[in-house]
Length: 470
Image (cartoon, rainbow, N blue to C red; front, side, top):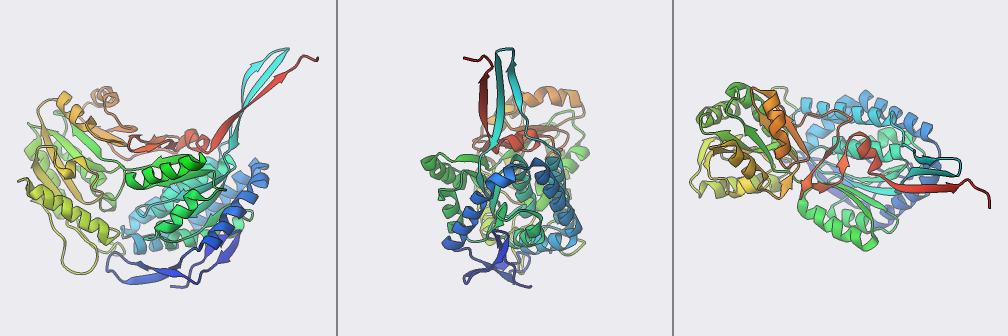
């Protein structure tokens, strides 16, 4: 693969230091990515800071630039999707879906304007409330949706008038670097900088004095560290963190329909989605049927290289994540739970783990309480719906949840009782551009999506005018 460069102040930047990027389907080297040095990071942040005023001054240019970026991503979907699949592992069709959503975000925010509110307009008084962009943003993205998550941050931040320094995960830097190359001349110098490096680079970004806000998607542990670092300089934070999303199947549900929906939303991207279904609560009367139906679907799913058109589920993105799934399943097995299907690492190269369905749990096993982030799904039996909702809510997390029923109105009535940022009825993970997305409790601070996602990158300013002359 040709060497990819960082984008700093609108120009290509290489580095004397590099780090390897591996294909999770076979463990082979794909390329070396540039390791951003402290000096290069300083140049990127300074360029973002210097670009703020002219970028803020021209809303029409911001809208036009976002539309241009959307067209460039759309025109290079095949190349970018292939990069995502090679570095991340997901099936190619899922990588393309990620880019379709990214293009949708860009076009949605190109059509939004930062509002100005008038709260008083009389003969003697005029009070307006403006929203000012926060400034230079450090956007730090995870490895499960390299460009999808990047666009969910870049699009609203740029639309709001902020400038951005983007750092992708060291596991998946290539698609973001290539994106930076493709859109480099679509924006004024310094408005968007793309750098790559290991975790130490993220620490330098979050503590940089010219960074005024940190927009981070990733683990709870890292999010807490970022919050502490940000507090020292009173930087603003937008934290989209972990989820341990419950699916509650009601006693009137169609088992096959529920199993289709639950399986698709638990095992997509090999379970590596913050808002994927990670635990299922099933009524006693349907429990055995649902476990069998989910196990059937897991056995039928084809595991393989995401570049193979026949692949349903790719590998885990890295060996650390594969080992974590193995540890959590192994821990559950010691508790006497039943493996309905799967339960092991596959033979051969790559970071593969069998699609796994677990039954006979009491709800207190680590794989139920913790976020597993992989292709292992525990199914917990319940006796009454109040018990199921209480158990679903008994968690540090509150990102997403879903209710599955033959009576959508019953599901919609129960949904507000579930403590999560989004509750779906008879679906999961679905969204539209105008919909907010965020978590309760440990699942994050702030929201992305919709007008709220753009306003997250702004601060209020009141302009109070006394119209009486003195």
